[in-house]
Image (cartoon, helix red, strand yellow):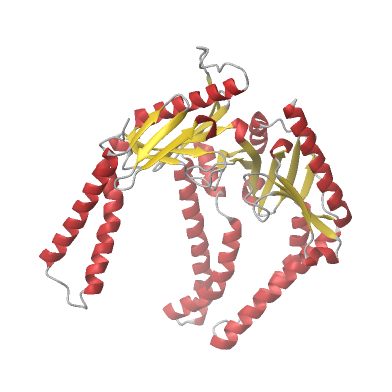
Length: 485
């Protein structure tokens, strides 16, 4: 089987623009200010575009793939040939994407991700939309057959039974609108407000030197900048999750989303590493949350192996859907000791002091921040900020899952099944040792290492950290024994 011939013009458009651009840069840089005649420039550009068209035509014609009994075989390359065999048991995700150029042509890109891969294992650019759907179904069926044979069972597809598809979640128009409103990263908005409030008055002064107008135009420019960031993030979220739908079919979840760039992908339930319930402060106030499922693979339009199973839903509904994937029982969080709040207060005080020092230096060198000392008002926010940071942290050691919660501006609750744990480590920073505090991190294949996004019980009692580490490790060993039995 081969790529669609219609993929040639799409590939030429994608790659030809870059080649023509660099050709134009080369002509300008080598001309020494004396550009050659327009006919010569046009000839070089046409020649570059023709070479791209020839190369892409050859690539498409020499690209072939075959679905065999045990593997997906792919042969590719024009001058240097590459042959790959991908065993079905290694296939994790089969994702389909279509952008606004490919969709009218009936084309789609197929990405095949494998377990533990750091990137896309194979990419078919491009096949027809019908062929992409057929490959997604066929590879999923072969993967289930291999899994059934490994377990000594017959897969449902092989036995001739119909595999039913159940719709778990559809994003309504109202929820899509709310998603756009709450999608802004409020931490970035806060940073932007500090920067804009400091420099917007200077911009306003250059536009209109009147002091009264400057005092009004400065905050107005800062507000416009914040609103601009908010609008951009809202539009991005709406385009990304337009017409989102999550379905369950056999042992995998399937999702479709996107307006300009349409995605259709799979999430294998048996490859789930962690579940993450994310709530920024605005979504939390409205009672909404996002459910993110992490696998060990990598997928298009994703953050590593993270995939939004539910981009936005009422918190109770998001929790119910999380329990569809992992049977998480009732969770009772243990908070850090109260002395952790003192640590947070000291940290935030140092941050405000550093900001004041930076603004003072800028004003001393330029004289353009005469009201730099007003930032000292942030010190009044230190005690409540320290309390909120403490209040929104906690951990829970359940029978089958470890659960950790952290963050105020974007609170994240992470659920880790014990049989997915890879490492458990406790640590103490120099500042934590001063207050006899410690951190326990529970790492999985999707966490990105010790300094990645592992589930963490942060700032717990230092003497208890080692005991918690051993407790989680013991639950992990028992989970492995149960799976072996």
